[in-house]
Length: 124
Image 1 (cartoon, rainbow, N blue to C red):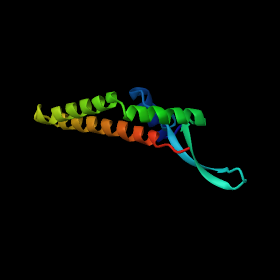
Image 2 (image 1 turned 120 degrees about the vertical axis):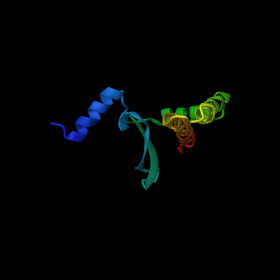
Image 3 (image 1 turned 90 degrees about the vertical axis):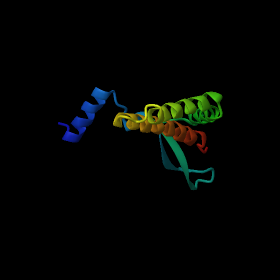
């Protein structure tokens, strides 16, 4: 029988169509042996609980770099900033929800930028 926290997590996941930690990409440092048999630390990327192969990781790095350098990314970033500013300035933040919406848009923009930069800087 699940404890209260596990049950709550399942209810929230079902209700909000949530995403668990296993469903996002995460990095772990693993110890592997080099050509001489000596231990060496290496980044390993996981998605949905499975280790991603080097080809997939390299493809993601390339795509993230291309995305950061694309004009589409610049337009998207500006669009999010515009809507966040609009909630604060044009709507004059007349309701607390305007401030919350603006902060959420700014946060979304930061998450997109930070995660994309993280993937673009993946080391082999």
